[in-house]
Amino acid sequence: MICSFLTLASTGMALKFAFTEWSHKIALLFGGIENAGSIHRIAATALFGIFIAHVYDLFRKKKNPVSFYKVNF
Image 1 (cartoon, rainbow, N blue to C red):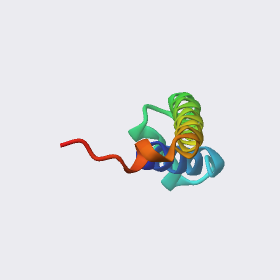
Image 2 (image 1 turned 180 degrees about the horizontal axis):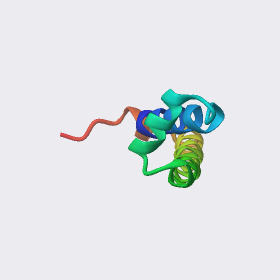
Image 3 (image 1 turned 30 degrees about the horizontal axis):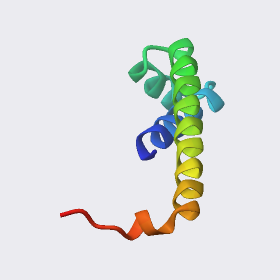
Image 4 (image 1 turned 180 degrees about the vertical axis):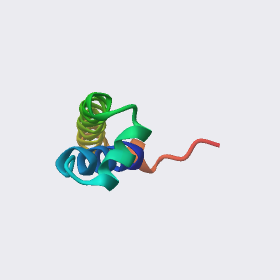
C-alpha cells in the first residue's frame, strides 16, 4: 500500500506540475510523461485493489472474530 501510494504521489506531482523543470527530471525517472501517466494509473488500480481486499478482510474477520484471535502453534 505504501509503495503504490508513493508511486502515485511522485507520478502525480510530475504530471500536475509538468510545466516545471523539476517535474521533467522526475518524469525522466519513469521514462517520460506518457509512461509516468501509465504508471500512475497502474499504481491507482493497485491501491484500489488493496483497499478492496482490506475491507473484505475486515468484514471477514468481523463475521468470525474467533478465528482472528486463534493462534496456531
